[in-house]
Image (cartoon, rainbow, N blue to C red; front, side, top):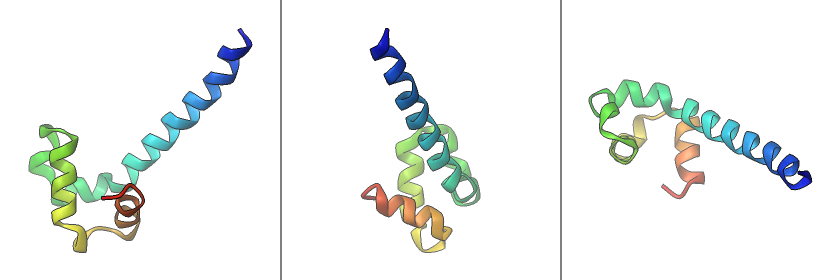
Length: 68
């Protein structure tokens, strides 16, 4: 039971970080990659990388932090 109580906050923090990461590039994705949004994350990521020079600073930084 104690182990479960220690895991729950970690899962919540990870989920919040993931959602925040998606929000950083959401506007750029809808702006530059709208036609690919239904094709999956990897296709949208490729599109964002192709449009890197046009992306917001926050989205560029996020891609760099994740090795993209």
